[in-house]
Length: 85
Image 1 (tube, helix red, strand yellow):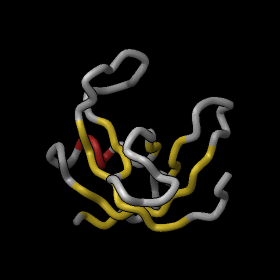
Image 2 (cartoon, one colour):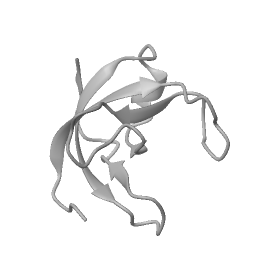
Image 3 (tube, one colour):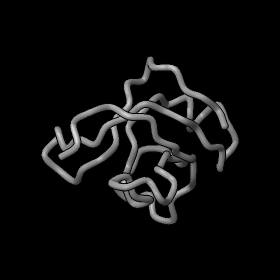
Image 4 (tube, one colour):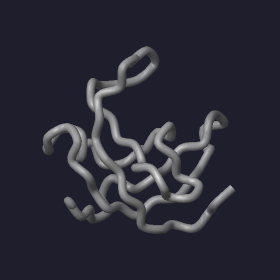
């Protein structure tokens, strides 16, 4: 499992099925980023999904984790700076 933080590009989107998810807008990695795939969930600052239009892309610092014992996801601390692309 990747444990180092690195910069990745993510985007906001509306999932077709929100069963088991919180909120209407979510964040996912864009395609073509090695271990970060488009099906992966991203835990990050809520402002990415609330303060910008759906489809906005961001550069964030993240790492892959499964610390909650489930499917691996990308984690970025909510207080870290983001770059709107």
